[in-house]
Length: 369
Ligand SMILES: Cc1cc2nc3c(=O)[nH]c(=O)nc-3n(C[C@H](O)[C@H](O)[C@H](O)COP(=O)(O)O)c2cc1C
Image (cartoon, rainbow, N blue to C red):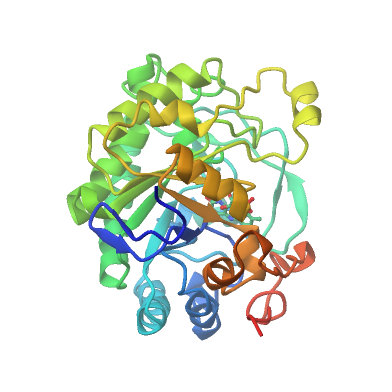
C-alpha cells in the first residue's frame, strides 16, 4: 500500500516522495518578467518535495495578466529560470515548468501595444482583473482569435516547452485549469465558435490536446503533465456537462501516455455559498477520473492534509498529492510530514503576503527546529 513516502515514477520523472508542491503564483519576478536569485532561493528551500511545479509561467507576451509574474519567452527569462533550476537541482530536487496563457483573464494594459486581450469568444470576464499596479478594474472585452491564430498560440506552447528545456527544467505542465485560455476553449459557457476549435466536444477539447501534443513533441510524453480543474468555478466560466466534458478530455489525455494528470478537486472557499451563487456548479471527486485514466498517474490537489492525502493514496484514487498553501508556509513540508505524520507541527500561511514583493512571506518562513 503506497504512502506519501513511497518513491514512484511520474512518467520518466523518478520522485522520491509523493508530497508535491502545487503551482503557486507569487508575483515576485524581476525585470523583464525574469526570475531572480530570490526566486531561486525560494524554490531551493522547497527541494525536499518529490516534485516542484513552478508558478504559472507565461508562454508569450499576450499570455500575461497579473503583475510581476514570470515568462518563458525571452532569453533573459530563460537565464532567470536557469538560476532556479540549478539551485533546485543542487539541493537535490526536481522541478517542472507550468506553462500558462491567461486569455481573457487579463487587461489591455498587459497586452502588446495596448491591444485587446484574446480568447475563444469576444465576451468579457464579468469579474474584475488586476492592473500591473495592483489595482482592480473591470476586465475589458477580448477579441476572438481566428482559427489560424489559435494554431499560432499552439506554436507558442511548443516554443515555451523548448525554452523550458533550455532553462534546465525536468519537464513541463500544461496549465489547463482555472478558467484560463485552454478552458476558455473547453467550456461551452463561453466557446460558441463554429470552426474546428468550437461546436462539438471534440472541437472544444482540441486546444488542450494540441497544446499538450506540442509539449510532447519537445519533451516526449514522459515529461509532460497537464493540470485540470473540472470542479473549478473561477472567473465565471460555466460548463453544462462537466462530467462528460472532462471525462472525454481525461480519456484522450490518458491515451497519450503522459507523465501525469494533475486534477484539482473543488477549489472554492465555501461550498454552500458557491452552490447558492452558481447553480450549475458540480464538484467531481477525483475517483471519477481514476476510473477513466487507466495508465496515467494522477496527482490530486486542493485542501489536502496529511491524513486526507494518505487516505487518497490508500484508496488508490490518486498516486501523489500536491500541496499549495501548506508549501508556502512550510518550505520543508515533506520532511515535516515524514517526521511528524498527521501530528506534524505546521506554520500557518499568511495570506497578506501571498502576492507582495520581497522576502517577507516568501523566503522567511521558518524550517523545522
Ligand atoms: C497564492 C496562490 C497562488 C496560486 N497560483 C497558482 C498557479 O500559478 N497555477 C495554478 O495552477 N494554481 C495556482 N494556485 C492554486 C494552487 O495550486 C492550489 O490549487 C490551491 O492553493 C489549493 O491547494 P491547497 O489547498 O493545497 O492550497 C494558487 C493558489 C494560491 C493560494
